[in-house]
Image 1 (cartoon, rainbow over the protein chains, first blue to last red):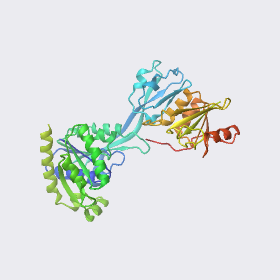
Image 2 (cartoon, chains in turn purple, yellow):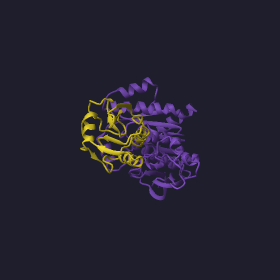
Image 3 (tube, rainbow over the protein chains, first blue to last red):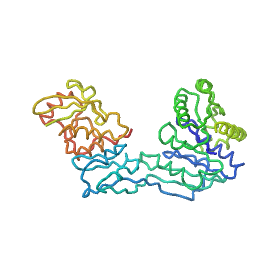
Image 4 (tube, rainbow over the protein chains, first blue to last red):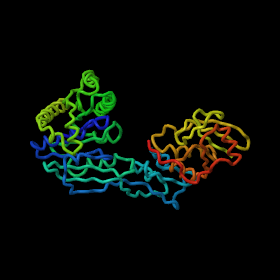
Length: 287
Length: 119
């Protein structure tokens, strides 16, 4: 069972929910893993405190053009969907930061003038948490614009993805890195706050879950602030509201100190157990 | 010499655009004949790499010099490869900029003047 936690808007409490759910389930499930796919700013390790014992670089293959062999025919630039290659005056220019590493340029080059050289984009780190959760996260190097290859490698690293329960902490937004993180999940928890910004971005994230055809439910965090439009939106669209966590200053303070939700409010453990049962039912119905 | 000036609306008598890769139009002028021409910038809405694509468009149109506000590193690298001279200006209409260009009053840039821009 792969449960992904996404949000649309950033800072709504994805990691708070994801880590609390993982900690709750670690008490009853032997085999649980946690993948922090927010590779631009991973922070779940702050709360779950894994002992990192494994590290692996993530590389992408970038074209390198041999100017002696290149005739400047421009086939590579034509085939590149991401405009990472420009041919001008018989000279072929490569812009590595735009390359998606698909290899099409190498395939179409009639002169075999292109070789693919690995470029390190970031790294994966993994280890066990004190509760025995098999934790891993990806870390995109500063200045690298391409998060997706790091997420893909993270999701396919070792056997973590085939654990009994896999918790995927997604990046915010509704763009490619989010799609890559959510792909293949059995259920998606959308964490939102009841504000106009929260609602707007929830709408985008919900559309995405429909597009990739994965059942979803909503957790309203910081309930009590803003307005009632998120609740109304969920009702209109028949989206189950799985949990409401009221705004409490103490929770905010604890999280700012690196304490998990369960450390400051152990009473939520029961709610997260119920949440898991409900998710199993909802994911089962969808199947 | 054919010169390309970045523009908001493609007109020669309104304020030019200081954006290069994602400007709306390029105004072309032949400095010998004084003939003006306007074309929309096909790279305007590129998901990435607007700078190099705009340069490619200018090269295809036989442009030898360009005037804009600032150039990102990718745009500048591509201009260099295309052999297009790059000039920078802060303000002015294309007509005024042409005069300044002919009077050799415009600054010719020899490196990128803007920071890298991502979508």
